[in-house]
Amino acid sequence: MNHRESCILITGSARRLGMALAEALAARGAALALHYHRSQADAERLARRLETTARQVWLFQADLRRPEDQEKLAQQVMSHCGQLSGIVNGASIYDRTPLTALDRNAWEETLSVNLSAAVWLSVILGREMKRAGHGSIVQIGDWSVHRPYPDYLAYTVSKGGLETATLALARELAPEVRVNMVALGPILLPDGSGPEYEARVKRAVPLGRLGGPAAFVEAVLYLLGDTSFCTGTVLTVDGGRSLV
Image (tube, rainbow, N blue to C red; front, side, top):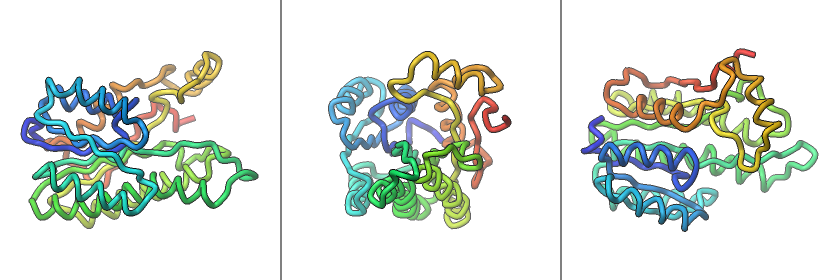
């Protein structure tokens, strides 16, 4: 993918890994459609920074728990961005939901954002990219779907479903559009994590460290790029965490 001729949608772009990816793509001259939900101030600061390097930057607010907002975001991206060439579905709910406290609202919200929104954006925009003759979609998954953590039933099911959807969409949208997943391990710690938790995480990783944003960005850029001969691939970026 020639980033200077590309327009890429990133959901959940205002903070953390989404922000790091937006910065990397902007530095390569891409046009960016940046989605945010509540982090308006962060998104606006990011957009101002990126305007000096990105070809163009658009900001779109949407509550991806709502089907109508999923549809609205897709339509806005198509209206503003012209020929979309890539999607990175990074928006995600990662809430601890012990079985004793799990309710239908938490379940449905998590699946709406982590699974349904990612799938429907891929379907609606993927059809447009297929008609245009090219495109790449990268879903953001989690290594733990095959070895679930306790107390994360809704999250784990949503990411497991997204992994299956990645494979199915890769078949549906081929050969014009490639669809892949980056399954993340300990790249960044949750906000508010302390040194004891960080040390415990590092002990559980064969490489003995956190991946950091650069590991995530490198994996996504590879799967977005035209030189990638991958579709229906789940690229695990976890420092070997899934081995132990």
